[in-house]
Length: 99
Image 1 (tube, rainbow, N blue to C red):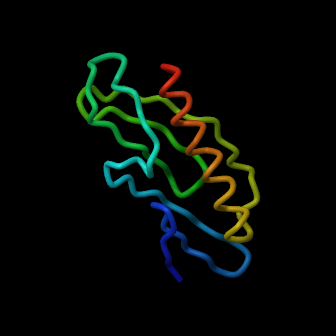
Image 2 (cartoon, one colour):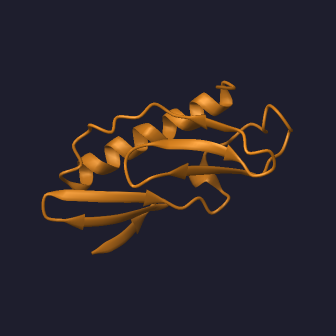
């Protein structure tokens, strides 16, 4: 069953929860500094279905990863949302610190 919450698309099945994030250009309310290489504001927060996130520049392709805890338990929706929130915030913070 899919549902959405704050940009996250949640697929929960018994014993496991998979989450993806769709950046609609608003970065879920997180402010991103312009690209340190080309100055572009064409940025996207990207992820896999695991708690691994990075910020990517749409103009020059520069990327900056966040800290990942791919071993985090995602058995419940709450655990998965917590792990994904931490990973997303880490990517935003790293990008704004200029990696």
